[in-house]
Structure formats: structure tokens, C-alpha cells
Length: 469
Image (cartoon, rainbow, N blue to C red; front, side, top):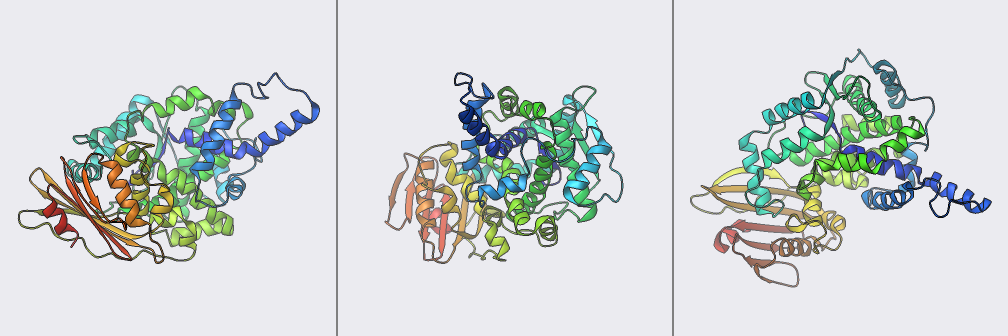
């Protein structure tokens, strides 16, 4: 996902939500006009069956961008509703010229996209993904996410991810080779295909003009900073894609909002753990909000400057004021060591976004009661790392989190999240949030100070206690 800058089919759902945010003002104006002239359609509304979808998606949109700045600024950033200036291009050359105009940059050389049908695209993406996502990396991630309760024991992450990505990717751009590929069914590009092409052409354009601020081969231990930079890049392309889509005719815009189209785009994620789904959506949704905050602060020039000084934490993406203020993360103390016989397998960054995804779906169950305000709790993050230890088939995890000065919620949030994730564990705790949990599958210990939360997860309490020393 880092090596390939992708536009996923599920982003069609994001487009639908964003489109409805954008159309909100127009919808309110239509209601005013209907009320003023006293004419109606018996309660069906001007758009008939779309009315209920309007209400549902507008509600989702308000929650989607919570904490990401003013909603009005976001709408202004996205562009005017029901078509922008000019007419949407349909050829590769016309769309490329339109992307140049939207992004206020120029291509240094022409880009020649490759178009693949569904079968070819699925095979190509899965091949590229599995080449990068080795069994060793998948084993590390499986052990960590199982210990944190984000995926069920025995989950095949490599299979889950490759299947979902193979089905969902509508197009990709590979910075290392300059290859740009778009999914196409039939002889002509559909509206979604043209929107996808605009997204990927923006990647090629910014790569030529600014350089993509992502490593060719991301290293273990740079996860949070790499994801933050990816959110900048994908947020940029999603904004350009959105502005291009605003030039489509009204019939094509409404076609993107068809409930069956949205359901089809989401079907490939059926049964996908919430943590993994949020991880997949983050660069597009929160990246878009972040880029809009930069744009509101100084137009495309402000976005361009971010390519020279990319965000370094997902906290800066979730809370753009931290990026604008130049805030960086603290370096927490290393977790403890579990003792003889254990081998450290990986040390990874644990960012604010990781906490948000964990807090939002304790135990991998969306909507399960747990942390009252996951975003605010994750916002207390000021640095985090996780160490994975292995002893044969056994797993131990040590987590060290720094908390922002003046915050006093991270310890309690970690306790609420863990207790909700592993219901039935025998847990003893203190009013401040420190706890010990004795479970059938694993044990856990958490300790807290004014600016630090430490969590140890292991097969037994003695080992878990050693991880928080």
C-alpha cells in the first residue's frame, strides 16, 4: 500500500459521502425553494428515493470529519456543488490537462496509463502486494494485532489483505517505475474510471513536480511517520479527484451515489476487521481533511510546502493544528524485557491513529461499548512504540506511550479499551486506570505515571509485569 499509491474502489463510497457534504448547501436551498412555492411531490422530495440517502450520508459525513476542522472550510475546499468550471474531460489528455489546472502544476513529461480489466487488475495488484507483504511481515503483524484484540486468533492477514486489495483497487501509480494503471471494464472509461484516472494522474504530476515524500522500501519502525506522509499524498490526490468529479454532469454525479453502486464497492470488505478497514481508509479520509486544512491556510502553495516538510505523525494528520504549530512527538522509554528465552522480533511505532482504531472497535467489534470519546483519547498521544517478543509459538508485547502535557485520559482509555476487548478476563485495577488482567488466552499489566502509560501483554502475569518495568 505504501509502494503503490492506490485509488481503491471503496473510495467511491468516500466520494459519495464527500459529494453529499458538498451538495448539502444546494440541498438546503432546494428545500427552501420547495417550501417557498408550496409545491412538493407528496413527501418524496425533489430527488425521490435519494432523499433518505441524502440524510443518512450527511449524518455520516459530519462524524467522518469530526476533529478535522470546520465543516464549512472542508466544503469550500472541495469546490462548488453540481459542477465546477468547465466540462469534465473524457480522454487521457483532456483529464491530464484538467488535473494540471486543478492542481496548478504542469507535467514535465507525458504519462501513458495502462488499462486492465477486472481479472488482470486483480492478479496484478495481488502479485505486487504479496511481493512486498512477505510472510515474515505478516507474521509480525498477526501476532501484534491478535495480542491487541484487533483481529481474531488464527486470522490469515496475508490472505485477508491480498483478497481485499485485489478486489478493491481501481487504479495505482508506482513512483519507483512511473507506472500508472487503471481498472477498465469495457471499451470506454466509466465515470468512476475517469475519477480514478484523475486521482492517479495527480500522483504522477506531484511526483514529477514535487517528488513523492515516501521511501521506496519502508522499514519496520517507521510505520506512523510513513502513514502520515502517505495521508498527505493520498489526501492531495483525493482532493483533486473530488474537484474533477464536481465537473461531471449531474446525472453522472447522482450515478456515483446510487445505493447499489455503493453497496457493491463495500462488498469486498465484508467481514474485514474494523481495524484493517480504518487503516485502509485513513490516508484518503483523514488525508483529505488534513490537505483541506493546509489549503485553507495557504492554497496549493501550502500543500506544496508540505511535500518538502511532510507530517511525521498521524496525530498531525488527525489534528492539523499540531502540524501547523510544528509539534513533534516525544520519544517514550523503551518497554521492558520479558526475560530469558524470549527473542525480540520487531520494534514498531504505535501512533495516534493506531490508538483511534483500537479504541473505536474494542476486540475488533465495531460499536462495542468501551472508550467514550476515542478521538479525544487518541489525541492525548504524544509518542508511542511497541516491541514484539516471541518464544516459539508464544507472543509477548510491550507498549510504551507518552501522554501530552496536561492530559489525564490516556491511562483510563487504555484500561477501558482492554477491558472491553477481552471481556471475561479477571481484572483488578485502580481508579487511575492501572490494572492487571488475568485471562484464559493471555494476561496483561498496565502502569501509569503523569506522562507515561506502559502496557505488557504476555502468556502469564509475571512476564507481563516484566514488560512494564
